[in-house]
Length: 129
Image (cartoon, rainbow, N blue to C red; front, top):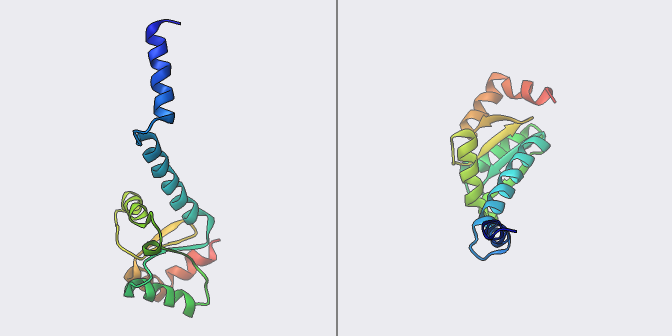
């Protein structure tokens, strides 16, 4: 094996095993992104929320009144909550909570959810499962 090849192999091994954190950070980023996508596409209703946020509470109350049970991710109760908000910003252009998804479709925040209920659009999204 040539010296350059050995250096390349050593670099790759260091990348995977090293303490530089780069690979670990990339893995964490990918796993949080995978988590967000899994939540959105594996649940009929997904709400990214904060437990104390009045707008998040309103969104959860709306689903409760409709006798729907969303999958709720309380970002303030997770170590990676801020990172998940960054991922939501990339996905939907907003970092605020709540962010509501129905059957994989982004509805928006609390006001958007309320509008979708009043217009009958939410019921259409819910029945398209």
